[in-house]
Length: 97
Image (tube, one colour):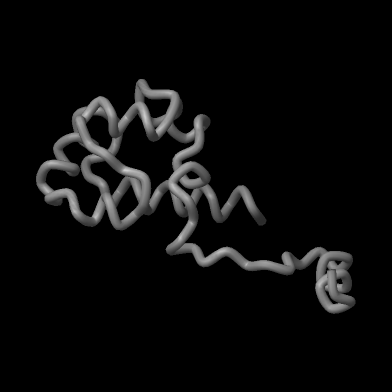
């Protein structure tokens, strides 16, 4: 660890800032989030239920919006994927502060 990184850490700053648009799906849709907003305990279970193969944000981008929005609406308390993603990002940002 460099001196600058140590200094930032001691000052309460994170030495590595995560890009909010590239947070892993596991971190965004953690067990707590999934249990609160759906009947699933993991994001993996949620996508398997819809017969989707998702490991990255890009995988989700390749699913037709109508199909994924319908699955989100049916399996969660969100009306669509965009709403679910925005809430997950907001919850994640609040948790790391």
